[in-house]
Image 1 (spheres, rainbow, N blue to C red):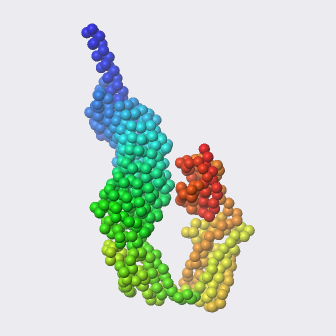
Image 2 (image 1 turned 90 degrees about the horizontal axis):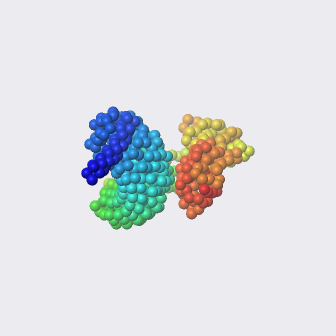
Image 3 (image 1 turned 45 degrees about the horizontal axis):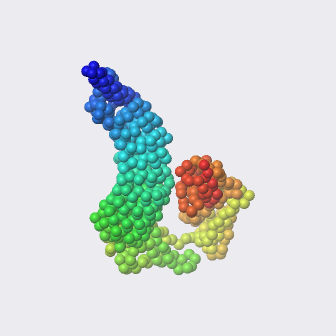
Length: 573
């Protein structure tokens, strides 16, 4: 009996030693392949069989196995070896790296799926390939995940049904920018409490299903702070369904360039301590937000809001200035060549609370209160700055408006395609000192070139008709007139668009499965896909022969719009 007990104890110790030894060997493999000497950690490598890795820097053991591993690689890029999958008792894996460090990259080994007990995974700052990241979807025990995506989030992430905290994106003083489709898979996480996505721009709208995540306490979808506002813009606006997330304490959707307005449903967010919608392209009117606690930090600055809705919500707004330049209407008598006499800024708000300051050039010209506009004083460059007595920290400023008596009254400018040529025609009703018209053409409505000149009529009050033929137009051409006086001054006309008869826009394949290709366009064009319910599911800009990812779209019929061309599309898998 004594011999049997000793034998069993020996076998138990031998088994224990082999298991911990396999963990040690996995750690040594990671160290050797991932530039371990640069980590400056206290690891005994290569070591000897039977050495214990417990107590090495960043290594924690429990029950005779390695259960936690935390290492950082910032000096040289590294690959993660397949031996990582041998650490089958891991519950905590942290391979995050400093924002300046190259970290781990390449393909994430499929053996990562062996870590069936993992509850915490931090790959933030690393650059694993997007396709290999799908392996993470098999780690269904995960409760917390931090990653830096290099592309769209894999569909397999929908399996992470135990996630409570998730951080995706790029963070740090040099966070950069990453454009991805909004990861709809997050809307299938029933236990998620904290979702942060930073340094990302979304190529698809935030889906309405985001409103299903009623367990959320924190929702942050922040773009890229270091870059100028407007350099990057996500697609779409704020879904009204976010108002269903009544447990939210922090809602931060800033630096995204989102359009549209603030949904009225946001008034349901009565537990908020932070509401940050700053640095977007949101516009008025601001809905009733009095349901948001007074103590909450509410920021709506750097958008396109005016005073509409601000007056009634001022008790809830902590930061609401500045806002984008506003438009104004120039009003005057209905006569040819007459100057406008009145400027009315689109400020919103109650007229009695407004004070307008009219600047001519950079000199204050007039101050008026309680009315909706200001008298102009002849030719000049004008702007209006408006304050509101109920909104003390915001001054709305109009764009600059140039008021001049034009030497030429151009009443029409049109073009049409005939036999792959463009016929341009325009008409004036009066001309003063008009030397002529330079015809300019562009392929992208930004860079124009001169393609011809037509003499003017000097001085006349009679109607004059002009024409010009472009013999070699683009598939889609943009035209404008540059009218010259004899003294060298000039004015530009509006820009018109003419599509050549030969321009054939194609979208294929049809039916489609995962990708579409657009051909037959000469320059970047507006692009959108509309589903059978009339909802825009994707929009943006497209170039010739560009592929569009549609693999997340459900089967059905859609309408594809490229520029001014629309066509039917069937998605069938």
